[in-house]
Amino acid sequence: MIPNEALPPPERPALHPATPLMVVHNAASGRHGEQDPVDQLRSYLHEARHPHELHAVRRPRDLAVVTRRAAQSALGRSGALVAVGGDGTLNTVAAEAWRLGLPLGVLPQGTFNYFGRAHGIPQALEAAFVQLMDGVRFGRLRPVQVGLLNGQVFLVNASVGLYPQLLQDREAFKQRLGRSRLVAAWAALTTLLGAHRDLFLRLGTDESPPVVVRTPTLFVGNNPLQMAQVGLPEADAVGRGALFASTLRPVGRWGLLKLALLGALARLGEAEAIRHGAVQALQACPVGAEPRRGWRAVRVAIDGETRWVVPPLRFEVAPRPLWLLGAPLDRRMPGH
Image 1 (tube, rainbow, N blue to C red):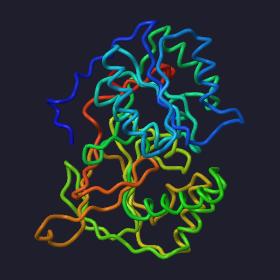
Image 2 (image 1 turned 30 degrees about the vertical axis):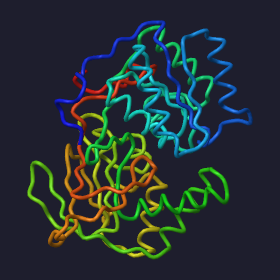
Image 3 (image 1 turned 60 degrees about the vertical axis):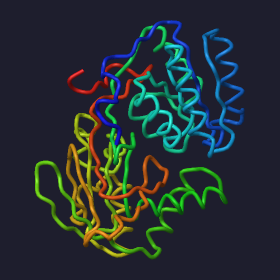
Image 4 (image 1 turned 180 degrees about the horizontal axis):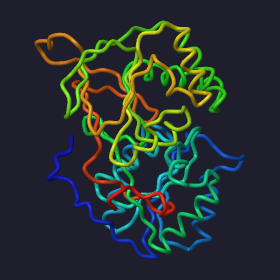
């Protein structure tokens, strides 16, 4: 985790009508329309006559390096970072913006775009760009809650167990069949019907002693839209100083399908097999004695991407917000 003393102060970043925009575009993200989004962006930026740099990422493995380069440029020029892509791309760019205390603009281009949709950002590139430029012109910045998993930023969700496996399967399907919500749904169905094993986790919060649970997955959400869509009552608390945490009781394949159906009907909160609640911080450890040479890394999912993280896993609300550029100001975090 980044030590608190190394974090920039939580004050609102400086913003003026000529603030330079350092735009990071992941060309591998889903497209909206037939025209190349890079060409569209160049056209919009040229017409706006606004100071900018366009950093196009053609290979996914270059995203982190390009983002760091753009972030350093933004820091040196008192600029803002702008992410163009899906939730995974936004995570990489937002992590740098949050770490350096930079304003973040978002132009959604992915499959689900939970972050942008939750914060009132249009899904069409042109409309999102117009809103972004209005935000720069009128100095519109809004604080947004950030989640941390062992110091790594998540904007939408973070999890361990079945959900990371689902993401792996979904990516394999997308590589063969393309990126769409239908392909994602088919991949999820395949995962639920496939073989998986339950986890034994010791879970505890800062306010309560740990308990041991057996579950196929631990899911922690930081996006009220995603929670509301499946009918979870904690949706209103998410983003307002709390995260959503849930585990499932072992239910088997058909039980998982039933839960998926309840989620599709926005009735997941009615399911007895799901344990859920709002938390500020949660720690998870595999049950059993620690190995002599330390814990083995476990596969986790963070904003639609899988990574390896060494337990214990600590999920928590970040000590300061991310400053979102251009979003409507009527969706503010309490206390700001």
